[in-house]
Length: 425
Image (cartoon, rainbow, N blue to C red; front, side, top):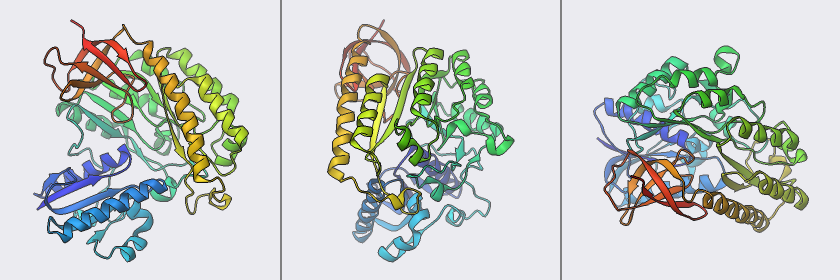
């Protein structure tokens, strides 16, 4: 059969879809990753992280059911976080769905009793062939008050280093040149295996994989940050000087209510120490605006934190009340309009910061990987930018470039979220 897998949500879902696709392909099916393609079966890998993600997932299910009604697909299956969290509700509300599979039930979908998302290194890549995500663990041991991930994905389970190295070798053999290490909590990798953090040893092992030119780190939990990973980053040129470290808030009172641990003083010191150890590092973070107990004064404290810290990349989520989380009893007292106003205030400030940081790159030359080609320009990224979420470098078409190759690019202009340049020869 022809099976089309549509992935919603985060990069961890992308990897799950690729593992699932590899198993289905081994059974002789033809796999697609195109939302509008005709197929015998559509598998929707859904997200349920926050309200907007659930709404997007439900909208996509409804669109695919309409395509089924028109005869463009024969069956619609739902998997992923929404299926895990709300299977019964989905089945009742959308009886036209042909199958809803929790994570434990995926073995039924692939007809393999021992199937596990982390238990294999076989994947069918859905990303451009020159980059891929490498999921090093599943689940999370933290109990942040606002977060439903532990309810959906359960406790942390780390993938052993030898299996990850094997997977990285396979990716390199397929032509992958850039790998993003991802997990719900990257810096706690390995604690469930050995009782101690094993991210630094994993990084050392992956640095030996030939063919991978860039490796970058995503989703590093800030509390008890393992500074030894920065030494590994400095020792091995494959490691991009880039770190995604979601901080969420800076107010001591909010951090306590969020169950994040640490304090404003700790966070300021951590950021300073990271930048001292890796001076040119690009720091990406995410924040939450409108947490139930957030006062206007605490919001301004967060604004001032952004102003002082000058993150290279920053995103802001408005608070989403999630049932069964520790913060759920706090309610959702801040109006959506006010949450959005606070979010916009932070993002306007970040836009100004981003413009200033990008302007400082004009006249400099950077190593850039080419992701795709548009009508008027090639689209690439520096080591300081991750796919889909960060800045792009738009390169004038003065000469033919190859998708997936690296070039030295001189920056000629800068916007708040894009750079413009030309290949340096």
